[in-house]
Length: 572
Image (tube, rainbow, N blue to C red):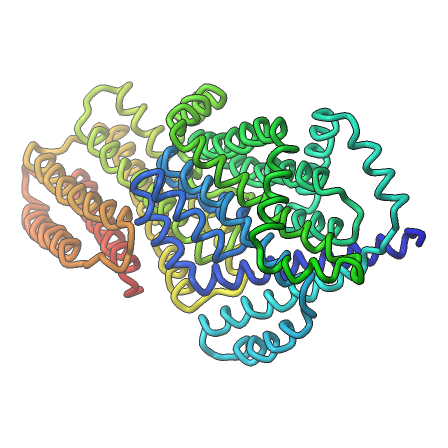
């Protein structure tokens, strides 16, 4: 049978169907169980061994090692995971992704997949139209699973049987020992980079083995290449991250490349062992032996099981061999990805989110929370600059503080715009009600923080005019302003602590409310005292107006600070 352009289009279409189903399924479970996945990552990574189990569990759930590794890189970027913890998760993800191969091998070539797909559609579609958010996303997961099965069924049917001539032609390239294996490793990596999914690449390889296109050893070499190709996703995700995120992705790459290097050498013996093991101990294949004379596909079906077993065996052994060397991998990642001055100077820059790799909103909110906490810390610095400006008598220092406040006001404007733009991208996706409320809170927080920046800039302009007019505060006025700033600083500390809370659900506003009441009470006291003294002979009215402007502005800062905490707990 000849292979024409129409066959290639059919294979491409079936593969796209498979990839779309996998994405729909992965996105569905991430939306439905996003908070659970975040909690698993945060709480089950106390050591690298538990991290391996965590990585396996999450990847088996979302059916995408790429989703797990990108999630891990983003958590390292957000400072929620250490490099050692991330290494364990990524090792576990490599084992978890082998579950897909077993699903394909067990169901893909032994049963009529439409028999599974249609009932899944029957369950999933009514759930998709449900008004309940999570039920809808579980329906999306089931529909994705059904489409994945259909895509695999079409892929199996689209690959023609090209006969022994084609197999002999491929085997001709496999006659050069380790060099041939390296060549097919590179081919497997290329296929994975093109389709951007190691699971899709594995489906292609298993289908070609089933169709008789690929000898088992060639297919195994391609599977090794797919393990390298999947690291590209994490490397790409880390490009917009900080140095720690890049190092986390590098650990993943080194782990996979080292594993492939030793397995390429041992490949023929490992395949021989697994073939014997599967033939002797698998009850599934005992029944197939009777069919071999009548069904030429029986041997190819067995090869798909051997290939799935090879994929799992390789990743488990690689984890066992290298998990003890995680500290060394971390050291090598630090050497190959050195820090730079840009990472140290993070003023006015987004630290935890970037323009690339926008994922499901449920998993992106953790980086947004870290980003607004960073935003809050930047805004709080303006209080210190203002205090220095008010108390300094040195012209150079005054000029420096004026420039700093102007710069930071622009920083707060830019951070609000960039965070809002990122949230706009998230809002284009379907969002659960809880996540929608969280995003709305973050938007309000950014607005209040930007307004605080504006107020401090207005304070700096008022001080600048006072300096130009050579007006001077009385000692008691300066002392009162310093006391007011102290109360505002206390409110800032509470605000930053609340913004840095791992879960907004644990935050209360009692402490913040007490701090805000203290600011209001002092504002009222200073206003009453100031109004009484205006018009007296030894009280400069122009200075009194600046004084009134300052403590009133600081009280407004206090209002926005309490607004931030109220947004954190969901009251605004």
